[in-house]
Length: 186
Image (cartoon, rainbow, N blue to C red):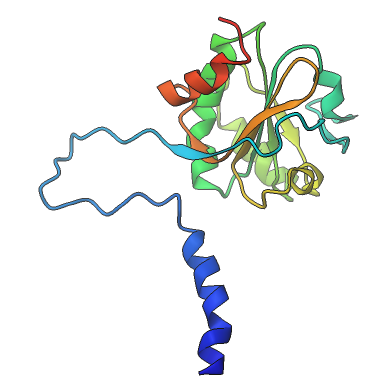
């Protein structure tokens, strides 16, 4: 009985990791039904917090911190090549960056520890706006403290957190547009 009780927290933790899975299709669903918008969990508990001060690698190989981007709203997305929801939302982040060019900066920061894997993955993509930032030691991920990718954090022009979304999101969808409207002027 004690071993059963001791295993219960681990079982609950494992079950909680599956929150991004889509429900199994029903027998009467058709193949043409549109996929629902990915909807990560909105978290406003850190609203007003300052940007982390940890450094990560910019596309030119130099170390940079988020403070470099103050002055314009900033959307920071932590992702990894091995993360399905991360990879799925990258094209919508690129479209978002293009749609809000000059009004919103969009940074995608890989949490992969293997730089070559990220380089190879990135080379196969043709993003118009996104640039490859790397955080191979996950310092930024640890500073955000969610323990999950994707995690996306919006900062205002002063470098204060507005909200974060933990999990995947369709950044072209209506929910994303509503969330961004408060900070990003059209």
